[in-house]
Length: 190
Image (cartoon, rainbow, N blue to C red; front, side, top):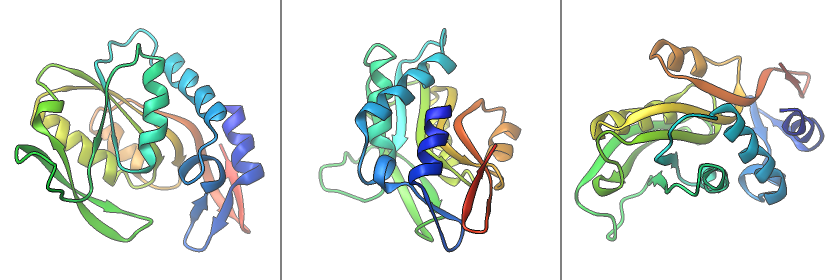
């Protein structure tokens, strides 16, 4: 998606450890007009697929997932929670997820009443690197016996193994921008 590539090139910053900082438009401050364009693009890519719900992980995936929902007839958005809470039901699907950027492992949870057997689920997230978060969400879907339609990613780090891990599992992956590499503090996009 050219608009996203332009945003990354103009506003993204490369930090130490191959971290791409896109907080000015994606995962701290959200550019809603831009999010709407991404929502339209995900609709185009998953056109004709029956989507019952969208699944993401807190926190950065929630904004884009909510916008994408508009283009799939406002289906519910479910997000996996990273923290235990008194208001989270006791009956949950749970999986472990390791965060590349936070260098931390979380147990993510979704209340069992929000994912049902046979539902068609689209996973949406902001980044794909090693695939840990997405694999955790797929594990939760498998526990619920829901069907995975595909995975929509805003920015994929193509030089890491996330896509290949997911494709080996038979998962359809649609990324709006794929980073080929970071070179001399600059982003090289496929």
